[in-house]
Image (cartoon, rainbow, N blue to C red):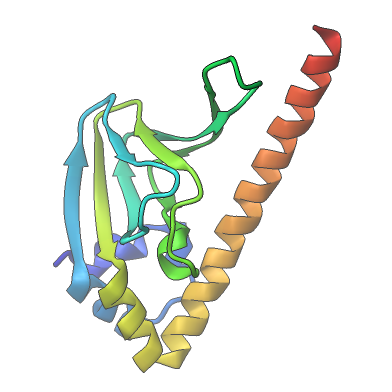
Length: 159
């Protein structure tokens, strides 16, 4: 369990009530990873939702450039202090859509998805707040990926 005041520091939880933060804090734990470690890969079961206390993580995807070339890993976003990742833990089919690779030593707050989903099913108001917040994260990631895709396509025409 972590202190609910720690959750309050995250922009993600802006507008959440103290009671909701207390509930979430009751199932939250902490985890640390060294620079260079892979937290999860695209396609892994999404069993955790992550809040980044400190450190940096790159969200990565493999790009396949043909049958005779190895895949190239592309950074699609960067997640740092105060941000969240692992929204797939709350959205069916509960499979991570990208990989997460630490580029710094990183400390995370973890909300295990089965416990979190059960909590959200029992408290519809909390579930609604979480889905609103998750939607903003998804929209931001989609915008970042669109920028990268446009840049990659433009670069491809030049080379």
